[in-house]
Image (cartoon, rainbow, N blue to C red; front, side, top):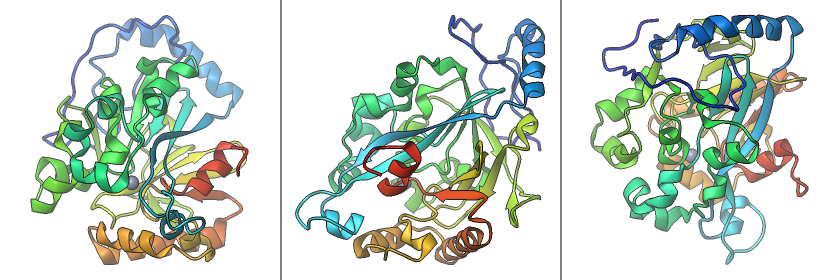
Amino acid sequence: MPCLPWTQTRPSGPLQSRRSRFFRRTGTSAGISRRHLPLTEGVAMGMVRDVFFQTGKPMKIHHLNCGTLCPYCEKLINGTGSLIKPARLVCHCLLVESSEGLILVDTGFGTEDVQQPERRLGKGFMTAMRPTLSRTETARVQLDQRNLDAKDVRHVIPTHLDLDHAGGLSDFPEAAIHVMAKELAQITHPDVRDRIRFRQAQFVHHPQWAVHQDAHENWFGMPAISPIPVLKDSLKLVPLPGHTKGHMGVAVRGENKWLLHCGDAYFHRGQIHGSPEMPKALELFEQAIQTIPQQRRDSLTRLQQLAQRHGDEVDIFCAHDPVEFDRLAGNPSA
Ligand SMILES: [Zn+2]
């Protein structure tokens, strides 16, 4: 699919990482430029990639919390605990080690958000959601902690472009940023509400957008897109509009099950599984920030049906539920 006219690509210098461990060649179905990739390295490393595929090695998936939010009233946000204490919400991201380099699904907050919170996130968000904004929670620093190189992040797939999902894009300026066309239009041609909602300061570094439009594939009965052709059997975009216009889920094949990162298509595990009941304040918040209410409800219905019909094959989770995160990240409190 060709790039839209406002899709931007930006060349960069030679790869210099001593720790680089991945083949550097980018899929082109979304019109991603290869100009910034040194051809000789691509040829030289091609055999490595082929060997990788012949071994059938599964992709390695890390669950990262790239931002903790502590709005007031644990009981009304998390559903349990105190009316006085703050809640705990996470920014659940995936870091995928693949034959096409590292892939990041959602970014949470980035290092620049931590350095300049009011400019990047705005006073209103800071006051209402009370993010902890710890540098050690950013994906950039968590890569370092795992001895992985940020330059190896070749693809970033934000479920949508809200500030708590796209803040880390500027930490990976060489990566292709996969978005739905309708999502990108909200920041390139914003209406009045979009101007308030989306933080232009998070996009001034000119991300290398890889824009997707129509979902023609079928993934467990849901429309889907393969954003990286060579990973078509293990990575899918699943449009879930409503929260924003181009909101999507991202499906990644794990060792035993698919994982479906649903972003903000829902906020509480009870919405998918029927219990526990969704906390009231969280429900009001979800409705207050939805862009297209009927589309959001339809997306949620499709996810509920997916869980009922294919729950043994697909593990469904959202961006902010801390219980889902702790379970999948293997935290002791889970
Ligand atoms: Zn969010």
